Image (cartoon, rainbow, N blue to C red; front, side, top):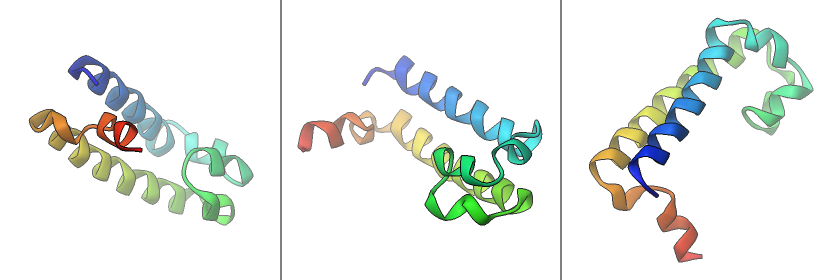
Length: 83
């Protein structure tokens, strides 16, 4: 995976997390719709719990993004090629 694709994926995911945390996305996806954005257990969470999970995942993906920038061999294409 090239660096520009890696950056575009990170920007798209960051925009989604920013929407959930700051722009009213947590209120919109509250309930069964949150399954598509976070995980199966999130369907019973309230807005604050959805925001906290989005923040945690955003931090984790930022760390993964930085590692992928420094070491390109740790990007997702290794997982696809090893299956």
